[in-house]
Amino acid sequence: MSDSDGLHDQDIQRDCESLICVSIKLDDLVSKHGKELKPAVYEFPSELDKETAFAKLETMSISIDKWTKEQETYARAYAEGT
Image 1 (cartoon, rainbow, N blue to C red):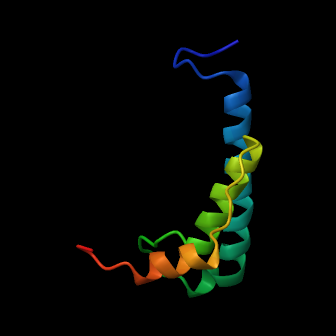
Image 2 (tube, rainbow, N blue to C red):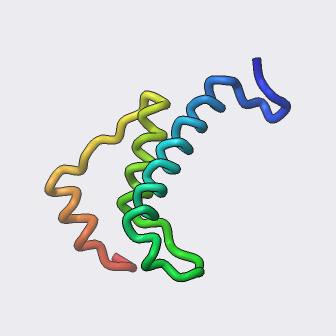
């Protein structure tokens, strides 16, 4: 079964699981720091963004390898135009 956009129930379920993960983490963040926040547009915390992305990938049975030390060194030493 799929909807008019071609998404299957499994895709929708995975997206819902990812959104639930984000909601829980945001609720935790707001409960800890909500009184400090003024009305504004805030960037999504990068750690929370990474956790959310990995949670989404996990629901899709996808994993990402970790860089070797050599790859990390190369990526950090990269200068534009080289």
